[in-house]
Amino acid sequence: MTKKLYKIIFIDEDKKIQTLHASKLNPSSFLGLVEISDIVFIEKSEIIITPDDGDLQQKFKNVERSFIPLNSIIRIDEVMLEKETPVIRLYSEDQNEDPS
Image 1 (cartoon, helix red, strand yellow):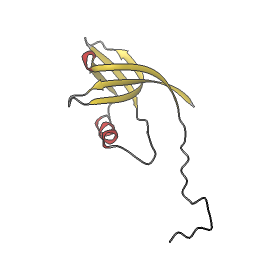
Image 2 (image 1 turned 90 degrees about the vertical axis):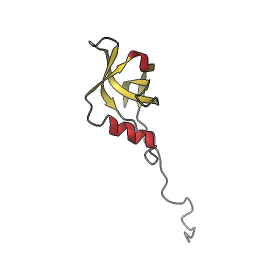
Image 3 (image 1 turned 60 degrees about the vertical axis):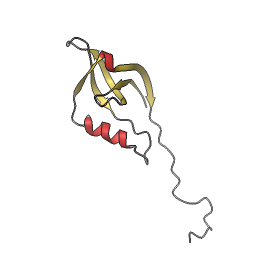
Image 4 (image 1 turned 60 degrees about the horizontal axis):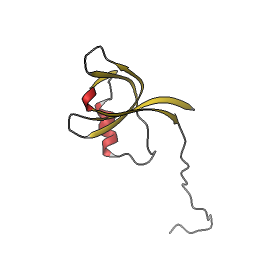
């Protein structure tokens, strides 16, 4: 499954560099702002979640649209995302191996 998303890299209010993915990006009617909507959270790993990922998801949890100042935006990329399911091996290759 291929999906077109915008990758927005910006500096947040805590002066940290953050990355958001969204399916809609428009110039805002508010002067000097970019409107971001349909925010998508991409799981970098099914096992490991960094604290920044959780903070960002919590911060934008119920947000429909966000307006980011132009001077806070570092870069905007249009990317094609292909969802790949990682293979996680939960057993040993050698079935005769004693686990203890």
